[in-house]
Image (tube, rainbow, N blue to C red):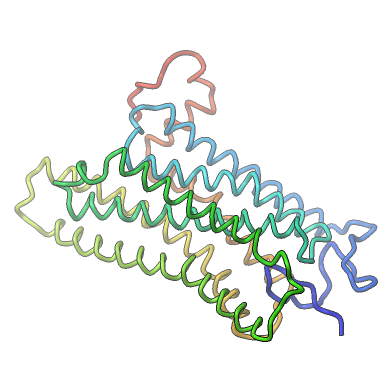
Length: 327
């Protein structure tokens, strides 16, 4: 019996694909490209362009305007770099995955999986760092500037990217000798998949949810307190707004990635297959998260909107506006 096509080490149902037909036990591109396939390419290309453009604006804004040089924004910058790399590296690979014949475990797909997993992990770790930053800003405001400074943020970013790079490298190096498999190989693969899912997604997400729940309780207590001075109350309000915005970013991340990870978890414990359409829909929903974050910043932060307009209009090239007051 011939093996089913494998995608991300999970079985995919052997059904008809938008851009393929099955011949000689392998997928081949259709000689006449269908309208659905063309539309798929256009949508994927648009997603790629918007992801790169939006996150480039976030990166340029934080780097150029000194008003945005804050520890929290440096963490947002790191997250934007990860999202930009998703648009540069992952989305093109996924386009090739969707509209070409990459259905086997070759080097091309392994490299794609490596970037995919490492950048996803980097985004999760950056979100963890942001939640820690928000915890100290809201729950311990008096010690925030001493505990969360530029050096601490730089260390957080370095650790996040280092761990992600090591995980990505491990994906490439793993499985280089697939023929050497012991009798308990299936159990080892199952254990590795489960541990990978828990460590790379479920555990960090649970930690972040607990932190934000604690922040929510403290923020509610602050809002009800009648002993807050007017100036202190203003600062607390700004911090709560920043926390709310970043919590929304976390919520959007969960909405985009949770269905994909639930699917992967289900496939790890069952021998059932998933259709190509379902798998790719979940995959593209997850990738769309990298496109949405810049829109969240622009919607909630007026200074990001001002910075975006100045960059897009080319105003920053007409003089030195790095010290401009962003309203």
